[in-house]
Image (cartoon, rainbow, N blue to C red; front, top):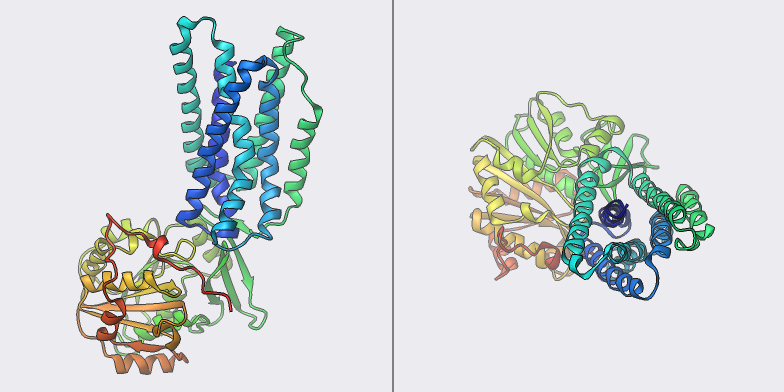
Length: 492
């Protein structure tokens, strides 16, 4: 019983930590700060729980405390779901206050209660001081194994099968029922020593499950990485928007692949329009899939174009096929996997075009922003090939400047496309960087932007170099992308 209780209590805390990140992501995004807050609060809860649980075990009979703590901890794991969803309706955005508060709501109290259980079990197992080392070591090891098992089973199996809500409710109910079973066994062995098990704790678990069923959720579908939904455009019958967590990631017109709603997509399309004579097919690699808007555009305007899309989230690919009408073929292929790994597997000198449009929240995944990653992009390109990357930043645009400086280490010719206030450093939003080993025709590119009904402007290679200045060059060893990024502009 001691081994089972320790294993379960420790494992439940790790399940809460892993799923807690997914639970708060739709409201505050997935950033390094979000991960840090969840991990930090989980560790703090473990420390507080272990310390206070050990102190309580020296003052009271642990037999009367273990079962109520398990039931209370399990009930609160269930209650976390509606609490976060109701609180998330008010706490949105990546500012530190919202991230910290929502992470605390998701983690601290249930993890603290469950972390108080193992030291109490240790106290009950200590028959003599001569056995202290072996008892503490054995139960510490069992608790660690519980955390390891929960981490691997949740990350590799449960999240791919069940929604986060189901994992939390299931974990909480199992823990609460285990607490009730432990109380029954202890009571049978020592009727007066097991203490009282308040029925209110079991009612809390049931009430939490009922609230979880009615709590508001921004999710239409939970993928392996995102809370996703597809929203119809009320002004265009065939228009659909793919929303991942808090962001509009892609716009797809089900009837017209040449209709491009987002300005940055029109800028990318303008770059593709000047790469080769009209209608000539290209070989393109797309880092990040989203709604596959650009691959569909190329397939329509340049028949025979061979596009390979690298998308890390299989759930997004499924939504593309089921709700956004994506049809793959020999010419338009989708491969599920990390784009950096896919880049390393690309044959050299085969791609006319590489499109970088992968995001974790508002941030380009750091492993795709470094000089080492960009050298893999350059290796995949033909001699006259072009890399075009979608970037998001706001003043002081520190991340964009660093990424442009990094591109300058790999390619001699780098242009920047954006609205005039963004190029002037007065505003933010999407920017599109264009890099090549050969000079790029700025006048033709400006004309192509106009043809795409875009008011964006072109900053020359010299202007880009001045704009980047002495910004940090990002490397695999040092790529503080999340710290450089300013996710939102100042409120007006």
